[in-house]
Image (cartoon, rainbow, N blue to C red; front, side, top):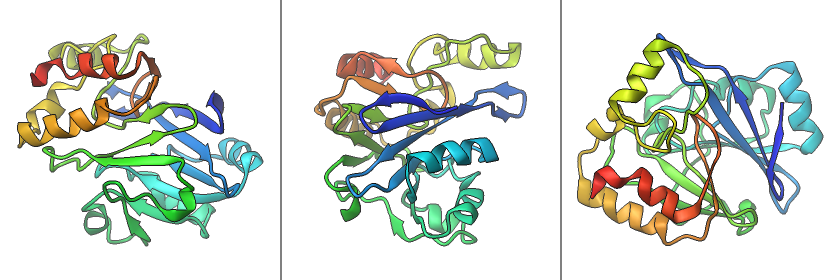
Length: 225
């Protein structure tokens, strides 16, 4: 279930439907210098996935990097009650039932993350308030919903949905996310900050891992020019 993505970095995927759409879900697991694990955008937890994660180390941090990716947090928190729960800005208000320990803040990773991650709050899309993480050791950028990268076969409703945004088979934002932009200037400024980072791999919550670094990300946001 877990696949090696880079130094101390693993990923796992699960099927996920949003109504008629087959979009799948991906999470990332990073081992921190402390030996604990950070779980980014957790997917549905079952016994098999739990065993594999626990083989890597103790789960110390659960990260919900935007206001949409919180569906499976309760199950993970129940399984790993000692883990600290980090949410994107505004998520604690949306999910008052969850015991959040911290808000993901721009440029301020948790001290326990040991300089492993950079955090950039992507502004201009208030419905999402996504916070992007960059894993320094593996040079991996962790996106959630800023772009999809679905290249596998999917059902007709999903193909049509992706075709509307011209993002089937390529790394690109969906039409729905583009329609949610409220401040294009703020989004461009956030994108410029992301493009200034050193990375060669891009993960997304929906779709496959992408390679190509900043140039690939720049192409994904060609609609923002």
